[in-house]
Image (cartoon, rainbow, N blue to C red; front, side, top):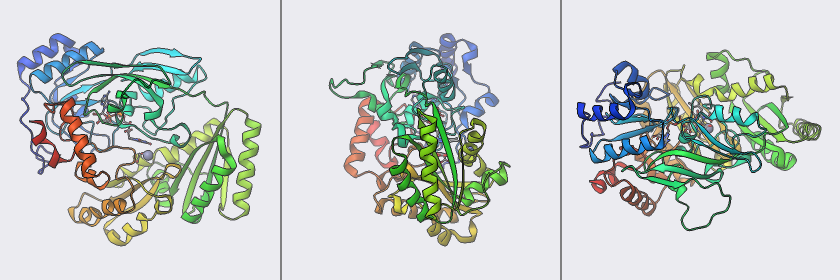
Length: 483
Ligand code: FAD
Ligand code: MLT
Ligand code: ZN
């Protein structure tokens, strides 16, 4: 990881941070909320999978929307580029600087503002950690409408900025639907107050969508108002072993029909993906080895009803042979152990070496098709090629692990994977976003007209291009438009 790690990306002509800039930030935030020490900056410069690293020497930690406004106005006026950062768990290099962009860490904007317990509407600052919000809500019989393996670190602002999907999207929907309103700050420091708590509000354009899923490229999200469903009184989880992907599809279809309104999650894992948690992380699987596994979870309000329904469903899929073995439980500690097997796969892969990671939406019948195809193409160059993910959403996570990064292997994978996905009208980024790592591939999922509109919006909202530069938009359409 060196300064010239990205030979194909040139630093744009933003100002370089100088002592007069630092003086301004110190006056605004005090010395403890301005980080300049190289060692301290390192964690903010490096992404979660340690594949991307910038070299910013300035991390700012505002505590209020007003401070965010002052910072952005100053950066805009002084032509300083800014990288907004939440929990830094993003997987596409969007959360860390590419060069020396000022890092705007939202972690101290972590206050809950209000909760309407009757309507289930939470308003909070963007830096609240997802798990903390969920724990707060749990005490009031509510829950966050999203859950993901990174919950202990990721922030609601980061979730909104990435339109994060996660483990229960099939039941609770995406953030585009669940975020009722938000507050954001424009690149030149103005507050966009769309912090509406209304479920219905068709008064013109729904501007919140400019900020949901645009990865901090159009503004900094400072507050969020979100719908929170009731915490289910009954939760049941089944962990199943299967012998083929065809049977995964059969079981998913049956689960939709048989479990209906109580189905809350349906995840698929292949044997090689599970192995990274049992081998590297030493987690224990309650089942013997099978080629495939599924997690099927129910959320409901009556445990007797839900358990009976789940057991009836499990009886049927075992009887017809689509499931070979399985366990069902509603004991919290057992459910957590099973969920760990799924949620910690990302972490487990880090122990293999370098991982080429893909996050694709594909038509369900093709969900697993790339695993055998890539095994043929990459062969022995890979340590492990495997697939897992949100079968209920048609979103597969494909991992190709090698000892260390190799251009030769990369050329066997790309652009093939993207061409394949595009031909099937899939998405080259189902839930993680484009960030820094996928900007060259946007055209595989978006038409030229759509890309033109995207870049025009960026030009209008951030005419100097100071917010999260080098990210989200295709490089060929980027600089000429902004300067
Ligand atoms: P960061 O990583 O800090 O930032 C992500 C992007 O959002 C960056 O572009 C950043 O500039 C921008 N950003 C952050 N905060 C703000 C803000 N306040 N205003 C404007 N822009 C901002 N993702 C899924 O979708 N589903 C999953 O199931 C899932 N599971 C994961 C499991 C693990 C173990 C890990 C490590 C990651 C997982 N992710 C998943 C990816 C990641 O956790 C999500 O993208 C998450 O939403 C990022 O939140 P964050 O606060 O860490 O944001
Ligand atoms: C997941 O579903 O586990 C996440 O999206 C992270 C990953 O792709 O590994
Ligand atoms: Zn995922």
